[in-house]
Amino acid sequence: MDYRAFLTSRDPIVLPYFGGIRVDAADRRLAVPTGLAPGWWRFRIEGRRAVPIEPAAPVDLGALPAVRGHFATGWIVMSGRVLSRLALAPEDEPPPLARATARRWHSGELLFDTTDFEDDAELAARDALERGVPLGDVKGVAPSLRAAFGLALGTKLVRELGVHASARELFRRAVAIADTGRDALQALVDQLAAERERDEARRKAEREARRVSGAVASARERPRAHDPIERADNALAQAGARMLACRRLQNGTLLDVTCDIDGERIIATVDAVTLHVHDAGICLDGADEEITLDSLPSVVREAIANDVLNITRH
Image 1 (cartoon, rainbow, N blue to C red):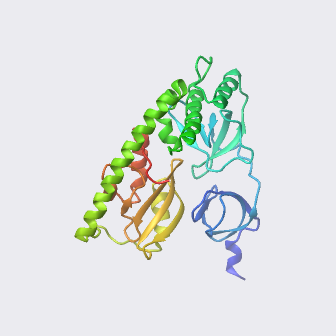
Image 2 (tube, helix red, strand yellow):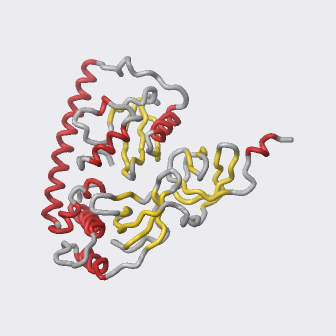
Image 3 (tube, rainbow, N blue to C red):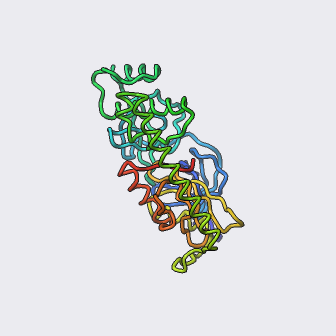
């Protein structure tokens, strides 16, 4: 008897693929080939591998934990202080500022489920958003709706200005943007630009110092076993983050890692052997090279918690 028969599921299974080199079922983590487009897929299970068969419709999510709030630019705003990114775009995107229910997948990612009944406050806020004006004296606006409006209006206005600010960066001033519009946004854009300019000047100085001195990685950093891309994925997974993509740089000595940390996409450059961070992709006031990929998620979470996240790579 072929022992492989015991390692293969008889029936294909439908799972969401968020990027990277793995998918998560309810009870296990499975390796997948690279090159898939994020979305729902039907997989054939072969041991610890999930072999993609074809794209599939989403499965029913009703048994998963629910998250409720207002929809804005691919995020669910749960309160004036809390938001989470939808890991996959809904098949039919809800209207801006719609009340929505999302569900937590087994690995923690948030998936859109349903739109919910809305009242006059959502309709009035949507009208103000379409006109690009602050909320003004709209009545009955819940904190999650006000913050979602500020995020959506801020996103619209930065596009008009031709500058970049991530959702979490805009969320710092979401309530102020909702109340005053362009004035609050301009203050935030100026602050982000100044922080990024200082960070880039510091990075240039550090690169020049390394070039002159021929500095190498610290001897305290120990090489790690196994394939570097798998190491990067494992390091992030153990820290509660997900690797979305990874490419080798400088003949494989560096990795350019795109990862999802609590819904925020971060691009970091790390040593392929030690996972020592060369560029964290966020402003760290010179502390980039004091961390490894393992500790990057906690650093990003601290920046989010303190409202100081400033993303330097997009």
